[in-house]
Length: 526
Image (cartoon, rainbow, N blue to C red):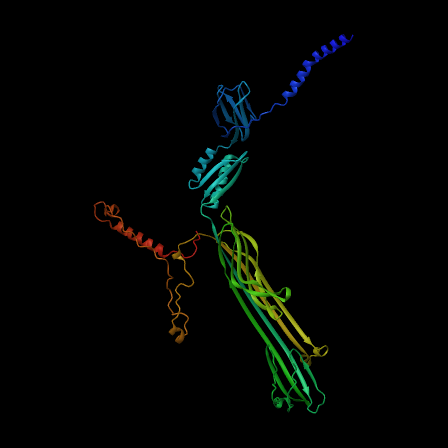
């Protein structure tokens, strides 16, 4: 019985052994490494064009990821035709009978760049433009052009050629950087009028009797000697005193006398001030397109500030005529400007005193804005028109309202101001010119000699029109030997000198001299 059971178990183990080996083999098979092949090369095709490819081995199977973009046609086991259908990107694999990859490529299909290059060369021969594709339906333009309008024209031509569904990215640059000169004009007229009328009346009794006085706007008259009637003459003041006390503004009419038995002193203050201020500032500055430039013609004034431990620090604040702007030349030749002009000046109105230091105030005219205009065009970016009037009456309640005598109990002040301000900007596209064509404000000025300054009180010697010194050029090289002095354009049909040709040469030389003499100094606005 025991032997039979042992034999049965042995037979069972022999029967199960193959299945166990199969399971072990399956587990070992799943542990093998998987290989992934990426495309070995990139091929760029234009829509509607093809290419013949020769593979290094025999092909048994060809795979195309997206047949709508590119497709293949097998010519033989070693060659295939590859042709583009639509813009985009796809992948092609070719394998042999054993399943090994013998050829692979990443296919990018775009517009016909050769035709685009030919079109640009014909339309814009002077421009240096390169065309390339980026991704799906995207064309990149790089290179240099002469003007912003050329860049816009190239972008428009390429967009029309490749179609509206394609994106055109322009990275074209100017062959010569564009420079913008900005002129700013501040024109301001300010007019003011101030009138002041005040009265003072004082009486005194030499016998130490009743005294009274009325004062408006000035110190009362306190020291005088009583005299006769008012119309009999003015009594002299006591030694060391004056009839008219100090009056910082305006004029004063004063007198002493006796009226109705009273010793009286009267003063009438009259003041009228008229002011007219005209300001015209015209700063100008040149900067490259896209760059920021700033300019200041003025100064800095100190402002003290208290620090720790009783120390005092000094800070400086700028004032004067300043200009800051950032120009951008657009594709159509217009200029976009971010501009900030400012005119500031020191003023005693609003000044404060701190620890014995008087800090002046600033009168500021400032504007900051962005405008767009063409070269040589002007734009008024800011303006101000102000008209204000102020009337002030100081009076004694009740007594100041009397019909005639009320004028003795009140003073009147009238103030009026008018201001008109205009800020105008004008940009110019400019180019450098020869240094000899630039005229300076100091050209033609010569300092006076000691004798002229002492005897003639002259600031200069009275001679103008002198030229400023300029760098000298090296001597001309020796002329190369001429082969023949014969000028075929200077002879007529009969071999005699042609007077008309001589006249034409004279006219030509005359025009050249005239053109040189009429050179415009400063910036060239072409």
